[in-house]
Length: 259
Ligand SMILES: Cc1cc2nc3c(=O)[nH]c(=O)nc-3n(C[C@H](O)[C@H](O)[C@H](O)COP(=O)(O)OP(=O)(O)OC[C@H]3O[C@@H](n4cnc5c(N)ncnc54)[C@H](O)[C@@H]3O)c2cc1C
Image (cartoon, rainbow, N blue to C red):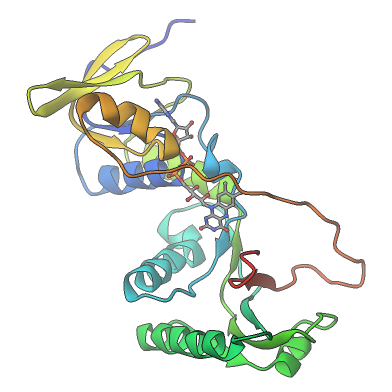
């Protein structure tokens, strides 16, 4: 089958994860010119297709909490803002703090984080273990000191969101090229000039590297050191008891590092 590679593009986006597809959408709809996204496999082939996709807004610093709040608005208003079916399940989410030595400091931190959220307008409140049991009957709370409860948070269908964002980018005029790896970023002097693909060089005025942990391989040869380190995490899939109606609350234990 003949593959058509565009002769040139104003913006070349490398990577079809949630970052690359949403950048392509924003750039295309804001009139950045001809936008072409290059994905070596299929859209959502990387972390965006494997994520647990919790949608939480509990952070200890203002920039991240603000970013999460703004991101939440897009996910919650998906059909109107991006288009297509809803992708967010607002199951509610709790961040728990366990009892144990020094737990008071963690409870203080929880209160500070919730105060920060509330100052930004994020719905969130601290609940006692007894209240948590009312919110989620059957949950074991004996070793819990407190929890922060976000009623509108939950989780996202990440594959649907990433593919939906790619479709929205196309509707805004972007071109999505799946199965088209970028082998190298072309550079002349101190300017990037395009991307090299198996079908030849595609000239580009701007190259956006959104290749996740693979970005370092593309950027190092052009002298850009991206401080990205890949981290392997473990995922366990368990059956929920019949008695537990779906969807249940999302639990995030920042002390044990589990969700
Ligand atoms: C198990 C797990 C659980 C997670 N849980 C959560 C969570 O609960 N909540 C949350 O917000 N985040 C979570 N994350 C993190 C989240 O998934 C990532 O931050 C996000 O998906 C990163 O998106 P991305 O677009 O930057 O990268 P990716 O989705 O990895 O996209 C990069 C894309 O670039 C492509 N690519 C690479 N090299 C090239 C090349 N040379 N040419 C063309 N294409 C290329 C890849 O194929 C890939 O599709 C989790 C991640 C994992 C793995």
